[in-house]
Length: 46
Image (cartoon, rainbow, N blue to C red; front, side, top):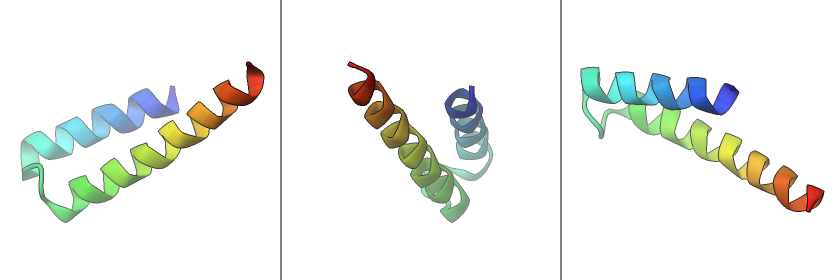
C-alpha cells in the first residue's frame, strides 16, 4: 500500500513538475528504498 501511494505521488508530481524536477527525483529515490525493502522481505520469506 505504501509503495503504491508513493508511486502515485511520484507520477502526479512528474506530470505537474516534469520528470527531472528535484521533488520528483526525491520521490523516486524514496520509492526505490521502499521497493528494495519489499524485495528483501520477499526474498527472506522464500
